[in-house]
Every structure is written in C-alpha cells, then in structure tokens.
Image (cartoon, rainbow over all chains, first blue to last red):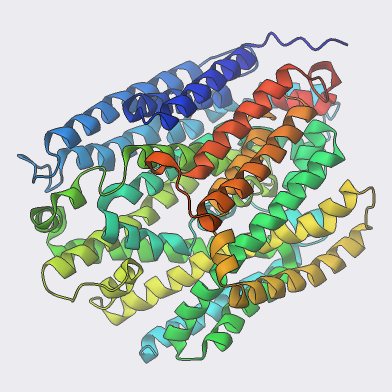
Length: 147
Length: 490
C-alpha cells in the first residue's frame, strides 16, 4: 500500500530537516550569527515535535515559541555584549560578571529550563499523557485491563 | 597518598557502592531485568541515575580544566545539558516507555528492531554500541586508575583493578539493575560534592564579584561569554549537547526501567535539575583555580586538567574526600552503564540479529561472562592501547548522538520514517565518524572554523534519515505494527 503521511508532526519534521540543512550550510561557511539563530529554531522545533500529538499542537506550540524567543533574545544580547567589550574589561558588570556571560549564565540557563524541561512535569497530567491518552493507548493495543 | 580521612571516606564509598550493586540482584528475575532493568524502578531512582550516568568523570576533571584554559568556551556544553534532559523526555521518553509497556524491551536495539521491523537495524545498532562502549571504557581506564592510585597510594595497575574490578563484579552480578541502583547512590554523592564545592568556592573567592573581577582584570577574554573558543565551536556544542543527549544510550535505556508511565512525570525536572546543580562544580572549580593562580596563591598549572586538583588543595580535608568520592562516582556510574549496554548488545542483540536467540536463563548466564570479558578487554585496551585509545576516545558523545539520535528522535515521532532510512542513517553515522577520525587524528587535518566533526555527522545522519525515508517504504505508515503506531500517535 502506498505510504501517505499528512500528519502535522510529519510536516514539522520536514521543516526541521530544512533548518538542519541550512545549519550545515551556515556552519561550513562560518556564518555563525545565522547559525546561532538556526540552533534556537531547530531546538524549538524538536520540542514542538516531542510535545505535540500526531495532529494536535496544544501547548507544544507555546513551549516551542517560548524557547525560541528566550534563545533569540539571549543570544542577541550575548553577541552584542561580546562584540562591545571584546578584549577589554567590560564597562559594567552584573554581580562581577561580564554582561554577556551573565546572560548566558545564569539568565538563559534558568529561563530556557522552564519551558524546555520544567514544563514536562507541569503539563504531564493535562497534556503529555492524560488518563484518557493512556486508556486510548491500551484500547488501541488491545491491552485494556492488562496494563 | 591522601590523608586518613580521605582514604576512609573513599573506602567507605567503595564498600557502599559494592553492597548496593550486589543488593540489586534481589530485583533481577528475568533477562529483561538483567539487561534493561525492565520496569524495576520509580521516578527518583531512575532520574538521578540518568543524570549520574550522563555526568561522567569529565565533568569533574576535564570540564574545570577547559574553563581554566579557555574561559567560558566549555560552559556551552554543560549549560546545554539540562535542556537536553527536557528534550529527551519530550521526544522519546513517553514513546520508549509505552513500547516497553507492551513488549519485553531491554535494550536500544530491541526498540529499534521493534520500530523498524528489522534485524539488520538491530545488528548495525548493536555493532555501533559495542564500538562506542569499548572506545569510551578504554579512555576511562587510565583516568580512573590515576585517581585511585593518587588517593590510596597504590600502584596504577592495582588502582585500575580496584575501581574497575568493583564495577565489573556488581555489574556482572545484577546487570543494568545494579548499574541503575549504584548510579542513584553515586548521583547523590555527586550532588553533595557539587553543592559543597559551590559554597566553598564562593566563600574562598569572595563571591562572584571578587572571582570574576580578579580574573577579568588579568585577561578579559576569560570572563566573556565566548572565552578563547570560536562561535561555531560553542554554538555547535550547545546544539549537539542538547539534542544529542537523547541519543546517548545510557539515557535512553533508563525509560524502560520505569515501573509505570506515570513515573515519567517528574523525571526531566529531577534529572535536568540535578545536572544543573552538578554543572556548578564544572563552572566554579575552573574559575576558582584561575582565581588562585592569578592571585598568586598557587603557581601556574602545568596542565589545565590539574585545575580541580589545585582547587582541592585549598579545601578542608572532608571536602576533598567528598569531591573525590563524587569523582569516583562519576567515573563508575558511567562505566557500569556502558558495560551493561555493551554486554546486552553482544549477548542479546547480535545473536538475535543473526537469527539466533539464547534462552533467557542462558542470556543472563552469558551476560555475566561477557560483562567480565568486556571489562577485561576494555582494561587491556585502555592500559596498553595508548595511541589507539587516544584516537578512539574521540568516538564519544557525538558518535552515539549521530548513530542513535535519528532512530529515536525521528523514528519514534514520524510514522513515515522507514527501515531504509534507519539503515542509511546508521551506516552514514558510522562511516562519517570513522572518516572524520582518520581525517583529524591520523592525517592531522582540521575541519574549518573549529566545527566539531560529530556535529556535522549528527546533522547529516538526521538528514539522511528524513530524505531516504521520503523515497522508501519499509516499516512505515500502514506497515507499522499497531502497538508501535499507537505509541507514536500517543
């Protein structure tokens, strides 16, 4: 039988493949700024792929968008402060840290953790694997009452 | 040789680890328990074990050494990993767990064979795992040996036998169950060490203000967000160490050790949060060593890898003992996981891929024998291999990421992913990793802009999986088994 895939998740995987291809091109041409944003885009798409259901985005879209926004804002500031104070002691510090360093650690580190990792626990019972999802899985696999 | 307190704590650590490992035999009733700890543990044990197996000895020695040498460059690795745990749970956690609920899954090749209905995929993946496991274990032999030798004041050979002998015995007795249970204990030791180090480092240096100002005034590059690396290097590292994390066999195998699907809920948070805490050791030990040298409190280090040792020389004895126990925990937890994975690939998966399957009782018996043989082989290879060990040691994280990531991240999320795509991506990952190894380590050539070769291999393998799948049909769409389809659609 001809394989036909019209799932939304399948389409997002294809988009992510295109992003990966451009990542390869930008890496090999040392276009590191573009590469930096593509890293954030690809990671966001992977999160959406993992958090969504076959044809339903649900909160996965917001998880992906949040990560992409946090990444893009932080990486922009990191690039900017790095360029501004390159090779010199920065004109201002935050808790003694270079402002670009402070954005990397702890700001981006902590902020990305919220939608990227913490949200899994917060959404588990409501979206990731609801009781209904589990029952549906058992039904589809003919294991109702066994698992 | 260390002082009596350190020796006492380290010996107590060895005894406790051994006892916990042997205790795990009580849980092992089937071959699936032995090779995969199938449905044996709850959230906390499995999640801490997942973090412990990912945080290797490199985080305690190599990481701070890189900070000492390059500044913030290597932080892009350790700061990426907590998101990697989230991605792991989101992308493959639920699907691996669901498949393991309905099939007797004990190894990654079991999952791959079930998804792609192919013994070729099983065999290729098993070969990839064995190669990577031997390469990894080989690099740990000398590192572990030197640490124990310095601590206990024994010969290097005796030290290697102590650390890997203990690991081998408990892993041989109870397989993956022992590995996970000891990983849990070792993870707790690492967390205590990391928090202790953070507090001591900040007290010693006068907080972040004193720490970074002192270093930055001497060399501003060391405190900027790039350090002495290149942007291509750090950005590729961030990408590989987030998405590549879920391709690591010692993480993926933890999902089928969970008792119930409900145990998935807090896993990402516990694993990722624990890794976050332990990464503070990587960051602050490295910078504190720089602070000590710049402040003239200790002489400049001959080798960057001495950064952790130099820092510890300024710490109270009990703190040194805890950190050494944490270091041993990091080495042993990762090693035991890899020994289990390599054994399972050799005893369970390779014979199956060739159409031969041992009875379950024989699988466990042979598992014990092969655990010993594999460890002994790795010890001989690590001790005598020298140049070859250095070359193959490069086949680490990135190799596993490029070989297994496409199968898991795409295969378990895309019904259109095909058997042919899986075989192509596995083959390409193997060829590219070995090709880059020869290109860089044997021929001495360099990839431009300091791009890590495994980043290229990983992206190309992912693309191969997608592109080949678009033009082939095997084990995809309507050809999927109903239970696998249900797991993908869940």
